[in-house]
Structures are given as C-alpha cells and as structure tokens.
Length: 75
Length: 248
Image (cartoon, rainbow over all chains, first blue to last red; front, top):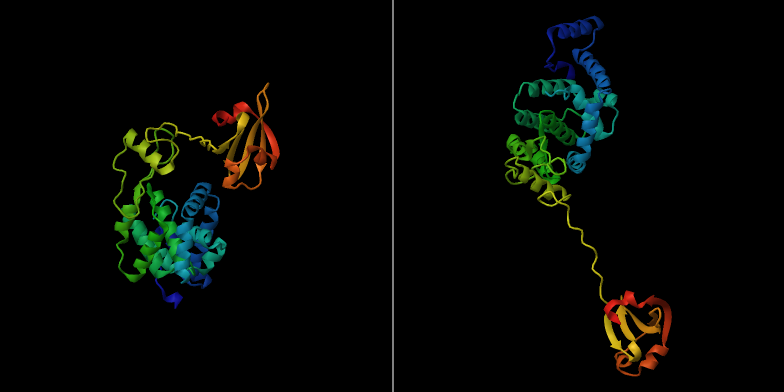
C-alpha cells in the first residue's frame, strides 16, 4: 500500500529526475530513494550546531508540554 | 517550510522528542506523508497559518510511529521561531489544542496567533528577553516603550522592580523573645522557640549574662520564688549584655 502513495516533493527538476533515474535503475520504489535522500539530509543537519542548539533549547522550554503531549499520544 | 525545518528538521525534532536515533526515525517515518507535509507548509507564507497547518497535519496524519502531537508541537514552535515569532502557552492549553484538533473543532491558527509574539523584545534594564505571555486572553504586550518593556520584564522575571531598579532585599526581622517574668537583680525569664531561658547578670565588666534553660515551667513558677526557678535551670552559655538589647 505504501508504494501506491503519491509523493509530493518540492524538488528541483534536476534532482527529481535524478531520483527517478536512481529508482528506475535500481528497481526500487521511489519512496525508498526519497528515504535515502532524507537520511543523507539528516546526517548533514547533524553538523548544524545552530539548529541543533535551538531545537534542544525549545525542547527544554517546552518539556512540560511535550511530556503531556506524549501522554496524549499514548492514550 | 522553514530555513531548516524541512524533512530532516522534522526527523531531528522527532528524534529529540522520542529519544530514538535519527536514522531509526527515518526508517520508520511515513516518507510520503512527511514530504507532502513539508511541501504544503512551505507553500504557506503566513508563519502562523503555516505553523497551524503543520501542527494539524502532524497531529491528524501521524507520520511518525509515536508521539506525533509532541513532535508536532516542537516543530511548530521551532517553525514559528525560525520565522521570528516567540510562542508561549501553558502546557495544558497545548494539550487541549491538540485534543481539539483530533476532535476536528480547533481553530489552530487563531490559537497560535494568540500565543505568539514577535521575537526580539529585550528589557532595557537587564537585557533579558521579554515575552508577552497570555495563554487564554489577549496579548498583553501592546507596545515596546522602554517603560513598558521594563515593567513587563519585572513581572516575568522578577529580577528588578518595574522601573529597572534593584529589588528591595528584606532582611529577616529579629523575633523578640517573649518576656515571661522579671526577677530580682535584673534577671529575666524569656520564651524562645518553645524553650524557657533565664538570663541572669553574670559579670559587670564586661557586662555578660548567663543563659540558663529551665526544663518545664508552670504558670506558678513565674509568680513564685525566683530562686526556685533559677535553681532548676541548666546553664547553656554566656552572652554579652549588648546582644540582649532591650530584654535586660
């Protein structure tokens, strides 16, 4: 079922073509290729100290809300 | 969507909330839903509406395997902050908002607009960030005058008074012991913390008083013979007369 979902990505045409080409050549679903692309982007973001610091700071400020919301999801 | 809050940013938010490794989040996330979400939010220019769409989509569509409401809220606050807005809300109000989203009866953008204020207000007196916090009512910070920011900071941080001056430090007021009885030759019986102490002149030069503790005192002891009361007292120390102030 997952493979039948449409992917709505904001990719520049060149990158979209590359992804489609990779998916076709490797015989993999497009979603898997996209997942791999996201994985690369996630790794690159690891080096972004400003982003990481801000995210941690927000998580700290919002810790009570986040804890309560996790309970909401679990419930 | 935001400068950094794209698919990868959402994955990092999810990893932070759940404690999972980012790579594991990528493996488990609904890639199609995540990508669609980012594309949709990216197309909305108004920051509050964009954040509202983000929160609603994450809460309703649950692209992550767990803790979607928490991940959505963290991402929402991050997105607003990226776009120059500070968000302050009481935790229970945030939970109520997410529950209302699920129930399909929330005006998310209106609520976020009430909770958000332009970032960057600083207190002129102490340079702390000044927030306009009001979880249920209208925003209370209406202007950015020096006086208003200083007073607002005093309310939020309690680090100075509303004019920027140092807060008055109150020194603990000494508790005057209750005088129970006065004896001959300047002796006095006082009650201190539930104990009965007898202060008796011990030395004239320098003026020193003996401090004795009486085990149990009945009202009759205080009006009877002073000698009998003192005889039952146990010496616990000596203090300069000056330290006793008006007691002696």
